[in-house]
Length: 421
Ligand code: GDP
Ligand code: IMO
Ligand code: MG
Image (cartoon, rainbow, N blue to C red; front, top):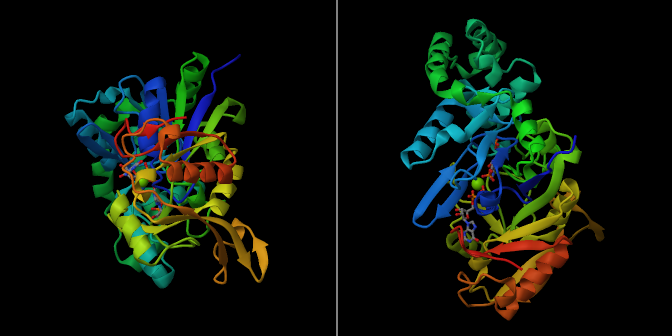
């Protein structure tokens, strides 16, 4: 049987690249937009006209009328968070019956968030800087085979015992925290949420494959970023899911032959929120200027994002591990007004050239290529060729560094602020 192939849009830095904004712009041409991993640790901001919303778990195609929306089996979903987001979307006139959740997705319970925060506290100086949303503990339960899937929410008779077992399995940790959840409260809260949640739950594998087999156009939306991938990011300073293109296969139950384009989203500079290696981080007034001009404060936690120059070593690594076919650059407008801009083109350690695997090396030295800046307001430009000469030269340098074509350059948060080739 021949099926359509699904395209992927994912982040190729440490998250917050503007994936949501790019997916929103692309989604008008798709019949389905699907998330494959992560949970409400994600914060995807969309700006359409005067409206600005931040999505945590619902795919970023939701403000376009055409697509259905799917939260795939690789995701972990808080019931309260989901209901809150559905209510927020319904309140602005969105038809939320288009939103479906795979029976394979796992439930984040409030005690997972408590465990997340407690384990961060216990790590002290080695804290990861998680979003505190319970993502790590929920994936841990899934892998330990004690988690609860959305499919299991449908089997009400067995659910209370499953919740009790899940809590009991963590009892030694709760004892240390001195904060055991009250089982009966968790069960009651869960049962209360079910009438809101269950109408959205579908057999995820059939749902997704039937979309592909009926020739619908499918867009897969990444969350977090490649360098936060649990296996290929800057471990242990990573999230707990697979954020790379391969994760789209396992997160949706599809084979690699079902994938078409893989589009990587990168900021024209670099940011990171939370702890961990960030070789190109700027600790000076330039870093502060990027943060304030780029509004670099976390969507989920409000934390200031660490800022630095575009790191071509890191993004080339991301091109490889994702099999990228093209890229979209975001936030080029934020660099307007910089006298000079830089790209990290190489890492050196002990006098030798090293790769991204050495990102955490405390003796790392950076090779930088400098470019002349531009001062024009570029936000209204819609063709890459119309960018001021220095901005164009910088985009050419990014393209050269990535080694894949650039499909678009975002020049503002609003949906239409995108320059194309
Ligand atoms: P995501 O997690 O990858 O979807 O990104 P976030 O939404 O967390 O962070 C990106 C932020 O930058 C949001 O506040 C967007 O509205 C904003 N943004 C996206 N693209 C652009 C752009 O091209 N220029 C500017 N100035 N802001 C942008
Ligand atoms: P979007 O989809 C940026 C980071 C956290 C922390 C690490 C682990 O908006 O790009 P977790 O709560 O997942 O256990 O935290 O991962 N992190 C993100 N950083 N954007 C995100 O999502 C992130 N999701 C998780 O800051 O460093
Ligand atoms: Mg974000």
